[in-house]
Image (cartoon, rainbow, N blue to C red; front, side, top):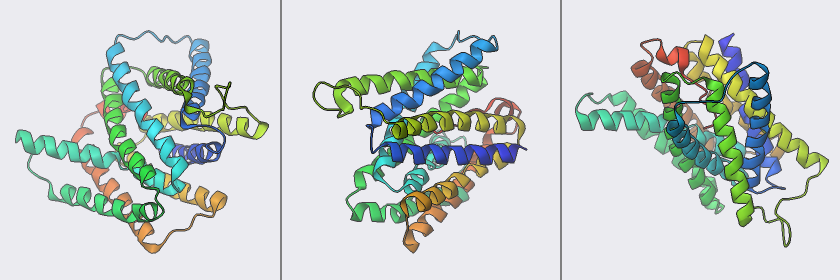
Length: 308
């Protein structure tokens, strides 16, 4: 059952990414960020209040830091989606476990508390080789800014993931972590839009809506929230290693969305790069999980592992 939850989460995140790419024709990145957070905030507010939950937290500083890195990572990812083929942007975002593994390796090597695990070193090195293959078309078509945004998003996402894990280990319930992140996303998107990011023209702050564009915004918000909930459930009831590796099916779903909606086609070297990054990410996830999941902490509280 946990596998099905994870597969649904991967599908929902890919659907959210497709919605973001479609909606980017009508809205700026900041507006997309705002609406993505607003829908999740309102749904969670009603649901938690109905169930008698509370939003009071003793970990304000931890939530602030998680929100800052999470919002920056999500903004960069939405920007990358609007500039790159969907599968490319999603693949780059899934490099977060690679960055976590690289940080763990560097920290252990520097402190002398852990000997180098050469299979892990190889996985990290191969992932960067995969990135050069995946980004080659983007560089040739002068979409390198989107590529850099995707890489930066995955790097910052790694920091956000570790902060979510820390909040879980401190006993903070998942709904509260998601709520404050959604609220912060809403505020950050609103500030960016008010600062002029919307490009709505003279005398206007927000882009006007149509039935189609409004439906896209609703889909982005709902799919994002459902994906977070499903992934949380998968980590709660499943084996960490299996669940963590199944998240990479998001690359497959994104490729299918790209093929269906935009007729995205890639050369063999791009598919090779995606395969290398996918294999490297699975290897890095194995080592990360082996290092942290020996007790019940990760399985019981490890967390939302969302798009950030």
